[in-house]
Image (cartoon, rainbow, N blue to C red):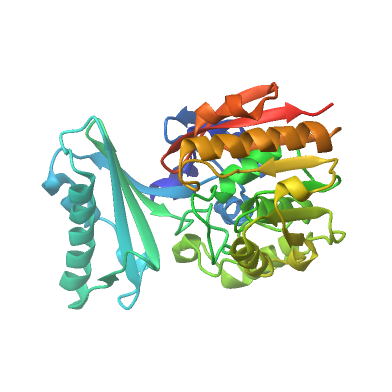
Length: 378
């Protein structure tokens, strides 16, 4: 038996700031938290719960199923342990695979080297036993593996998510410096958003906040558009059971009133991208979209979640600061009774809003060390 089968333990990788909401998701699925890690959360459950978590989680990045744990001080240690696994239980010769590595405080220093040792072991396993081997495909593999080495102890994992769970599948077209889907969902969750009140993004770009709001409001699973999963390669996977499980979850999708979620942007190209992206989701055509400068919005009362343009998306800081100042004036004069969440990739812009925040929360988005600012407009 492999480690995840014997101990029923799994690992949810997540952004550090999202740990608490990830724990809530894990426990809501009927799983038990074991311990925290810098990289995420260790937990225990039956394998079927892993299918559900992957399909429905709005905040987890990846879910790993550990196969084997072993001492690893050099290439030989990795190679010989990789050969212990019956790889035909997880991958066929005509399938493809990829391996990623990460290392903390170990004699092996290079994560790429560690991943290469795993790849060589799998290739030689098949070559020795069958005379041919599966190919490597880093972009769209059938099986994705992760080797994590900490203090000379390696854990070899199957990535049951296959690709990062923040990639919902509706963002075929993106704008500059978009916010990641799981981070947008996290910001909406700060408000306990459920679709009962009106929601607006006046800098909607390619539609990330709108897409996440729609999925929350309509109870659309985050993995609804995804066709391929890493857990398909687990020995416990049954296509028939998966289709039944998926059908039950999809049966909870609900409708939404047209215009309950609204987005606008000064860029016609951005609105075209958002229209195309959101049309892929159930109820997506009920989001009201318009090419409009926020200054031209007459009034709004409800929830505002947005990621305004800043440094990366505008030519200079002064121009970004002026836009944020004007946006603060818009909120003060035209949005009384609203709750506002603004993600700013450059924290120096917070002062430009001209309104006192209820809180400022650190949140990294890609390479940006940004802040979520909450403002109540009375």
